[in-house]
Image (cartoon, rainbow, N blue to C red; front, side):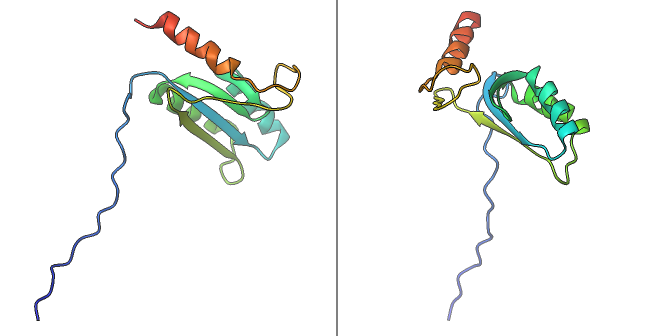
Length: 126
């Protein structure tokens, strides 16, 4: 009786960052338990991105600049109870919204925020 050789389990490797030096759009969301820390986090993130909702922001930057932004948030957090997440968006990602927008306009389905950033990107493209 012959035995097949054991195959070693291979864990998936982390995919390479396709454009590590290119600015990308990111969604940063947070859930902060303490009202004082919440105000500080909100003030800090407001300097770096566009508000989409009360605790969700659209940021633009390379992976390195986003990592620096997150590192700058660390002193304001209690990592045992607070939660901050940042998700990269693809180039063709569309954003839709219903209900009250941060511009306090009527209930609309819109993507004007992302369209405005795309126009800025093409204006600054080399």
